[in-house]
Image (cartoon, rainbow, N blue to C red):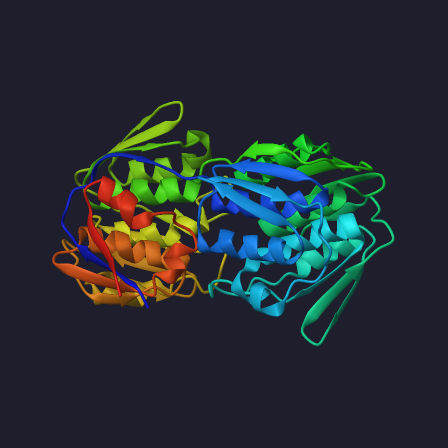
Length: 415
């Protein structure tokens, strides 16, 4: 297993460019299956999760080619509607194929998906949405079958604004007969990006970014060309990296309005922020405590809770971080305490008493964002740290060590 070796106490400085958003690219790749032909997707990050999606579409019969970060997918010869169990277990986002395959081929079979162990993420909202649209869903022997002669427009109301369920319902509804409404829809920017791609294919979707999405079903969709939006979680991670090392960095290829909750909290923590049209500059000196509560967008993203926890470990005073999205997302706390952090977890709340320094240690990533958190802590810590299980980090950060080195970090990859 590979690991990162990090020598800390280096102030980051300089410029870094964010990749396209993994969480936008995944549903867009799935959506290409809604039509036959060649779709072209630009700025796709080369990550483990993307590689799994590529394996799935290839296994289903598509042909895939890369040119730099541009992905071409020819879905003309799709001939399977079942996704193997071993690929479903690799990544939770594989559930995104349900909506497109059901919409195009009227049936689909999947197994229960896997992914990072950050707490229960049942897919019942996905299945209920498909049933609302007229699909017959049956579960047995670990797999899920869904079929429908043709999906019918419906009103779907989510108990919780699930991002994945919202996206799956959108992809299923675009070719349903009649008009569908998704109420209490998730409002994340990645949903707006999916709407843009679906509409380029000929769909009639409106309202993404609000809590109500309207989809007027169409008979036919065509391939499309699209550029994925920048990765706001990667951008937030680099901003926090600049803050925790008391650095001066400029993060490019960002949509600042997608990061308002993050930049506001970083300012509360004592950093100076300058916002441009497509960049954010951060300068940091002394850090002070602040409180954070994770919420669905436009609230503070749960995917940045772990990196923020590392930052607040070195902030003057006591901070309180409340995790409202996932119930098991404080696994990184034990590893941070190995490095000298003072954190106490009570249920879904972490109480952080800032310390003057962290010290290098051998730590282990338990999931994608926990891995990012530990790298950031290591950048600020005295001495050398080793971060193990970095295959999790490879799932969501493209060229993470390379980009940090561009900012001056002393980080290497080793076996």
